[in-house]
Length: 621
Image (cartoon, rainbow, N blue to C red):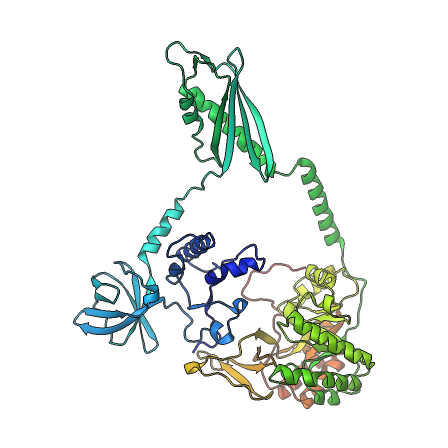
């Protein structure tokens, strides 16, 4: 089973609803996909949006997919979004093998809603006992709406499921797009006139973004009196309408005071057309080209930005960071009395397995936690993916506690929090704060503090802080703990044979094990919304780097002690509290070995030393 595999998102049946919701642009994911895939989905979605008739929806089933889901956006449940049966492409189900006679294989068509006529060169896949093998069709003996008979030497068995996984006709059809020329789409209106000496004039008009673009082209010495056969309006229209590969087409041609006995060589008419189209294209480009004045102003702003950015170096703010703590139960609070802490991040989301119990009990828990930590700021960690209605409900709890004289703050992961909550708001680690511009934007969105991304290296963190000129916002860094690597709406329903993982109480959790690498095991916990929190198997431990970290300019360092017992919490807090004092590197190394002794998992330094090993290094800011 592929427990973390998902079906492919496909919203082609819901495009009207998405459009009515105010969406103005659709993103189609094509990274790491073939040209056939990209061409098919773009072509299909474009035609479906335009209301064109055809097999566009059916074609989507014939390129790579892991079966389709409408996604959470259209209300699908986690068990419908997840595709645990396979992580690869099977294709569109056709039917089952019902008879084998030598090399002749009879397939009964069962998917009559999406009936497809097979052709030579199509790829089909045979699925039996969870294993898939495929062929390209070479010999189709018989085919109708009930059955298909093919010739193949491939060893197959009756009862095998059959899928079409590659369509040769779609592949061939997509080739035409490689040679496709963008059609002319800007209509030109031409008016031809002459004066008494046969000097010609072409007045040209067209619209760009509802703005009229016009010009007058003068033709000198090309028109003359006809000696034999005068040129006709039809001949002039024919030659001037040949716009070729330009973005224009001729919408209309008017004639004003055209002499009866007028003559001009065809080559000269063609030259007039080229000159008119060239001038029209120049004005088209000028329309979208910034003026020299605006370019100069933009360049000035850009240079000022670069100079300001490069010259700013936040060296004046020397800070001695304090310790903040993530916890998930009140017993941990009892064990840490006496420590000087900046904040207590209380995360009770996994203490209950349903919203009713959570909201009934969380106010009392927060009240008790506040009384147990009078000198530290208590921060209520809200659930991930929280909606506006639930956030407003949380704000009512905050105000209710405030009316009792209990002041708390909140932590979340959506920028609109500052508009809902009247108390201080802190950004959770999954905001993935990456650079000083993110800090500035999130401060403007109402956040009072942020956790820097655990994906950053020490040098990148140092650079970020040095370039941060945003006032009145606390920057923190998690230096120890088993970090959340994924938070998902997946509740692990629809497992083997459609069975669900039933969450009976807050003690229930799952262990994910990598089949290929048995030592890779991840703990999965579930919050009151039945969302899954996948916890890193290894513990981040930066104790040996504390002599550097405490001089970075951070407001506090965070110890993530969620899902740990009181003894672990006390031990880890004692060690890091001591590391903030004047300790040499040898003493810090001894602390590392102490942590290894009582930690329940391997420890590592995350990305702090070497950064992200599998990507090109670019300096962050």
